[in-house]
Image 1 (cartoon, rainbow, N blue to C red):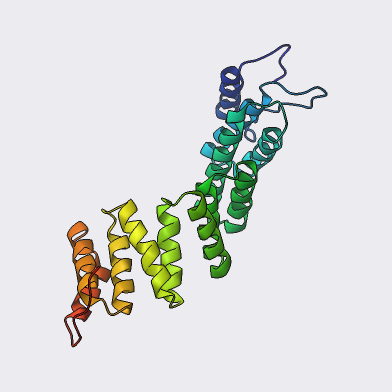
Image 2 (cartoon, rainbow, N blue to C red):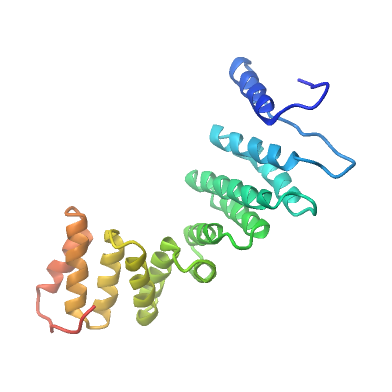
Length: 242
């Protein structure tokens, strides 16, 4: 479909949906075309198209539009909010790839989001998550620390970094991050359970017991916390607090 003159974003996306739903062909996509002067408003169109394609599951096509949006967002003269919209669209694209366990593609989308908006802590946290899924704990830990520097209240970064530190026997750092996780979300049973395990490593059994009990109060079916609490009922020495 070729338009003779300007067309609104809503009209463009409505026509894309109409063609995709009514024709027995490959999904229709909006093509903004090439430009020879500074584009005006094109960035928002491209972001909307990328979002629509992600929601429909056409991730490869969405990637092309997301890359174009990222290029436009970095150009002088484009509205400031385009940066945040583009980064958000790239994070959504990364999440969609992650849900399909396409971790390399997800990592690419998150890196693009971070380049577009270096203040987007969620993009960096998610990059840490997929890096961890790819088996690179050291790089994942680096991403989590960066995310926490950007936003100390990144719960998942705190949780996952605390877990990595716990596995690597960096117990003091693990306790710091897991205490922060409990502060950020006191109703998260997994945070209490992990903090209990870290405190137990420090010999602070009374504090560990309190957090295991709290995890069970929040989720009575949480077997890991029940197992940890049961193991504590064996021989041991009662230690310090939380």
